[in-house]
Length: 506
Image (cartoon, rainbow, N blue to C red; front, side, top):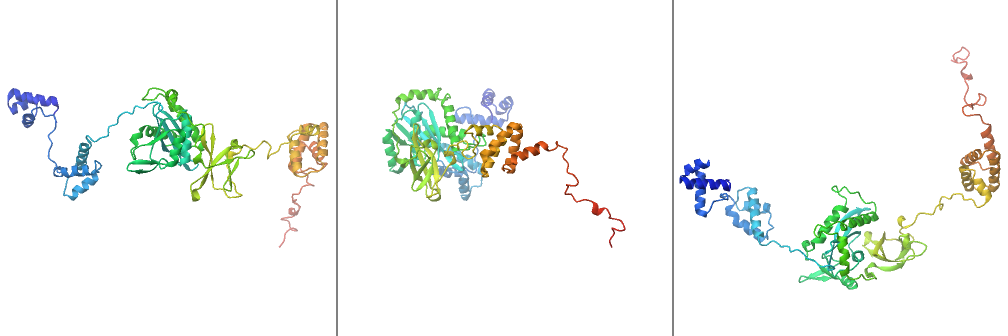
């Protein structure tokens, strides 16, 4: 195809010469090309800048293609259209069909595309929340709860274990308290926890959600079903949160060892994004939140606890609570406080969920399998470390005699522990004897002897003195050799006559 400048040169050469061949010679092209552009100019009234469309095998079927695209509302697949055309006798290539379908779709969508108008929000009016698939922790897939304050772009992200009503209510309560107030409206998806059904296009709210909304003086709205574009703010926030928090091959993030580690990662993520200049507002979300808090409603001091189950009191001396004839552990910091317990799931997946309400709102503190009477469900992380010496006791002197004995050294401490475990009698007398021997001998020698006595279980009255005497009278290292008279090795006298006449045997 000639460029617009080349076409003008061809037409100008024809206007000067009036001859197709002369114009072709001046423009450096074929006289047929000159004729085509001249005729096209005469028909259209201007220079042709588009290629001439040649007839194709699909031309007789274009009306049918447009009909199928219109019936499918622009969703017809090119491969299915090509198969139907082949049944009608089309012999062209699938590539041509795809081009024809694409052109038909473009023409159908023209004028039907959805136009998005920028959402100009007011401070303190709208909060959106949604969920995202979180990482796997302890073999269980978690859920990321993502809330987004529309005006300030302030984000709240933290993990939850399920999307049941108690978990959602607890997440919203925590979100309100982190924001420092309650907005006028909350926008979310049509989850069963929010919308029970639609009648004539009108969403029917969950009764418990209606009570929750009245408790916090907030109005809950839901977007149009299957229309994520109506809450694009949280959709983008969920996508960014998953990209940073969920370990993938792309971000090379490490797996989380515990649910607490994931919670810490979410807090760090929120601190990072809320203290970073937003690309739209060109301001820090945390600074805009400080301004927006003046337009938020106060958070109810008493959390909504109806959905959290029944209350139970944790004893002041053990972090265990009783629920439906079973005992379950809770973090030891909650001893003497009130918790809420409820049942989640059925059959083999049944769990007991325990919630505590603190200064930051309701928080799930434990989740156990169903316990049976006499067999409590325990979590070692709920109990503090054992006191020092609770299981492995160490000697602690209570009087002067015990202190003098233990100052001899580690051998004396080992002897005391082993002798006590063996049920040795008259231990105080033997300890006094060892203290006296430490004054006669060096304390190091006595300590060595006590250690050997403990290792070999020699706790008799004269054993310590015997070990000391043997230790002092034995030869130096390398000089102690066993004599022939005391040796147990078999001698060679029996072999002395071997090979002689008298020693031979038939």
